[in-house]
Length: 85
Image (cartoon, rainbow, N blue to C red; front, side, top):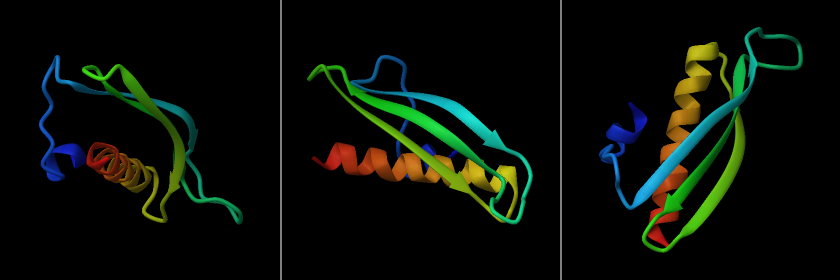
């Protein structure tokens, strides 16, 4: 998993919580699109009672599986930026 590859550990009840929802899927490549997903996510710092919301899309010439992997990597990168603040 991309979060584990970024050295994050998944722990129930952790101070930083993540919620993820796939809100759109394009399964086929066309002249104008690549296979991809649209994702909404939030990061919540429970100790500070603050949340950060993000929505992004990712497409990949490697197909839907590649787009999902890219989305997970993008989410891990955003989480790193959020925690660095």
